[in-house]
Image 1 (tube, protein in one colour):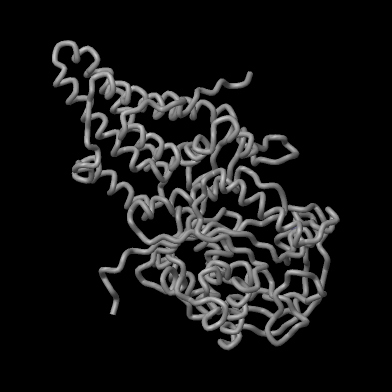
Image 2: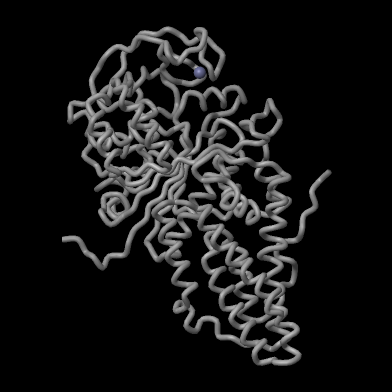
Length: 499
Ligand SMILES: [Zn+2]
């Protein structure tokens, strides 16, 4: 019987990142969005588990390491170290960082899924005959090619014939369509859901699930056939449950996390992904889970890409933005605010240094930072003493914001949530202008104190709900408000634009 008093669960995953180049603003964005949701869920008092990690088992990574004359594991360890530093600076609160080279954590899950699919009769041996792009590390159909070359790499793919194991993806076409139509797997936004459904209309073909093994490192071999290595789908996608201990029962790990966060009706599961991996997550992954008779993910959120000057960022155009450079100017929390306030979560977003700085100055330096100072200054000058913890959760404002918090954990509209809170901050700002407590204090100090007290109480409630966005700053502000002390240094020093 289901235990209704059981705390709600929330499991959120970032895509495992592909370590083939420098960490860029896109990595910072995806990780931040996931982190904000994870922190919202904790604020809503749910048991929360936040997974991120790295997709390491690929020939392309091996090639990259070869080019740099490095051992592939050294290359990967370096990349992971850089990734961890970036996440630390951004204050990403993940519970686990999964590496697909992890033989204890990840490999048993991959093998377990393969065996399930195989027992089901959904894996079969066949010959793949067709084009293969070394750059994509993927098979191509005639349709994928432009003038006979791979549009992404500009090279002519090899024509190959090789033995592969195939997965009967086609068998699951109607079942997948049904779960997406019926919102058993909810896809956000609607436009992406439609995109997947119209793709399914065309029907699905079975897909290659293995490739010949030629002795390269970091390949998980097909159980019972060491001449074949498991291809990316059967390996990388499994991280979402292998990390929770799936496949490890009675071995190295127990499955308690898996049973708590995946195999549990009471757990809301959310994959956050970019649009480039939409089909893998909304079609191949659910089909694998159906075949293995494992519960499906409940939500998939597809965020847009970051653009600069209306164009996709690229080194060739020279419009890339380094997350570290930006954080050196406006701090990690400045960048977190930009992501939640200015990048539309369901669409492509524009990011330029100018925009980032004006947004920082208006929302943080002149906004939140300035308001904090004004309120604390008034508390000190008019001797306003408040027990802020008293009846904290009883105000209308608290109740309304709790509802916004619950809503965003259902519709994932992070921008709306942020806008509501910053509007509430401006309301207080406006009240200071209209009610003028500094003038009133001279004639009716008690009334002035009352007004300030109400403003501070409201402010204290608003920043409580800003915590997921600006965890570090809110901690500092709360402390200073509670002790009626001005911050020693400006919370958000104004930044001048470079000319
Ligand atoms: Zn290619």
